[in-house]
Amino acid sequence: MAYKELIKNFNRIRDYMREFYVYGFKSREEYTNKSARSYDDEHRRIKSWLDDYMKFDWTSEGKHVFLSIDTRLTRHNPLYNAWKAKSFTDGDITMHFILMDILSSPDKEVSFGELVETVNSYVGEIGTFDIDSSTLRKKLKEYVEEGIIESRKQGKVVYYRRAKSAKLPDVKLLDFFSETAPCGVIGSFLLDKIKNERFESSTNYLHKDCFAFKHHYITSTLDSDILCQIFDAMRKKQTITITVINRKNGRKTKNSIVPLRVMISVQNGRQYLMGYVSHFDTISPYRIDNILSVKTKDVAAEKDCDRFDELRAKLDDMMTHIWGVSTQSKSQARMEHVTFTVHYRSDELFIPQRLEREKRCGIVEHLDAHTSRFSADVYDANELIPWIRTFICRITDIQFSNKTLEEQFKNDLGQMYELYGLNDQNEQKGGEKHAI
Image (cartoon, rainbow, N blue to C red; front, side, top):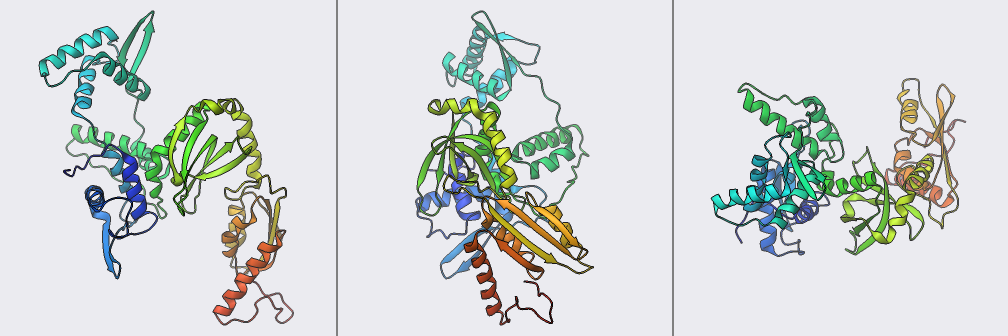
């Protein structure tokens, strides 16, 4: 089969790009899910979009290809190019321009019967293929759902007209939205439209990028379609069925859930869906990059949709005890309490400022000019460990209600001290407490 840059099934591209450029770098020989020829075809396709960002190196295991993106120089997410390579059949393209020509303005309204007759006269002149009324009806329904065309039913007759063009947002707003918002690829499409319109109207037009990003989380781009379906279901308060893959063993499972919120980490850009699972009567998190597909209108669980507002209010109450995304299971009846005290010098006032800024659901007490105490009651204290570690060398006291976790934390510190050849840093020195 000849190589083509355009694609029909984005899931295949999503798998390749994630497997090689997000989760890890694999050589051609290591990728065994598809044939070597399929790998070569997809590699050439991806290279056509990202050639300026693709690098490779050689190891004992062979050639490894990877992405190298410098955010100091790259202002716009290059992965959006994958979404702009959608393919269409000749019939799709011809049908689109015929409809746009017939429905030339929002003021012109045409019945379905007239559309069938007019479209057939256009097609008759071209003489390359036939378009039946069923195909036309499906295409019109698709355009109505997309907001391109509006429909109105009068008696048994359905009338169609082109939707009015919406006023496009400011370029600066789109510059920011496209690189920071979920489904930012929408902003990228609108930005392209504005640039093209302004370039055509003025040969001197030159768009200036307004923003640069120190932490630019672009890999979630591959999940834009999944995220868009989730947002649509949330807006309609629908139950969905998601297919989730376990990356460790490759096992796939289906779960019927009520989507309540999408939570995005500002530390690593990872996205989670918080959903209610009626079978277990719990609200659980699902990593969106592990969701393979979303199916809406699950009739078997439709009764759960009536509880959408109630379930979201329940999640909002739970948020006061959620540090990351872990929630309380039925087997976990108690909260876990965490408290630690930090001591800092007069020139380290950024420490209490950090505590206040990053405390989330915790409480910060300022004991004196150089000492502060943080405390929190959470469902899963283990989620705080990476954050707590950033205060090492200033912690004078730390306690967990989960003693197993506390012991593990202190043992990890002990192993670190041994690794660096240090003495026990918890000992009292000169009658003063020494910070952990």
